[in-house]
Image 1: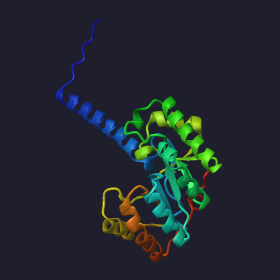
Image 2 (image 1 turned 90 degrees about the horizontal axis):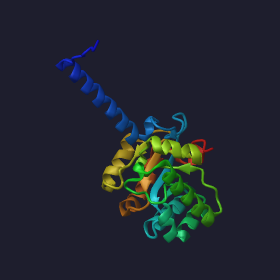
Image 3 (image 1 turned 180 degrees about the vertical axis):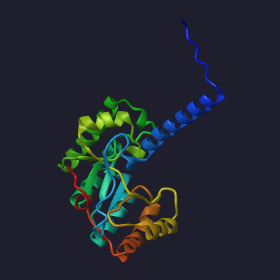
Image 4 (image 1 turned 135 degrees about the vertical axis):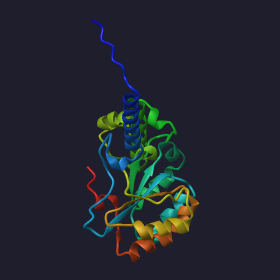
Length: 236
């Protein structure tokens, strides 16, 4: 006997609402690395210690990375640079300087392609391994940390990271230094900075060069010590 199930308007609306909520959750989990939705990431240090860490993405850049290294050296501060493989090819001397100055170097993919999130796990692994290889060739140091392009995660990346076994690093304070003027970034630091923050900056922005001296002073005036990432969190 054939049974016909008839859905009423209320059922269809409820189903649609559930579907929208589910898709929204998947999208939010992908966009917000701090949710640890698809994979485990380290996004902040201990809230009980007055320490923070500076991290810089998207370099190395011949001009701006060099200027940022000058400022960090002046203040005797160590930071972490998440570098893009194809930019390293063009700026090996800058990467060597980052390493020689005692900063940590992390993997930020080979291409930082806009559609990186749609790559297969195999292609992601190739990009990560290729970037590891050039970093190790230039600096002689093994790389064990990775920050996804745009901070986006998904099941493909989760599979890739299980193979490469990197520690994934996110952030707890995004400065928006790529889109906002110095005053706004400094205001955000003043209002939102907390113990244990991993601060996201970019060493490809002239605006970041302009604000960095003042940002360091804001952090110190709040009674916070700027330390290397491996002094803030455990990097396996």
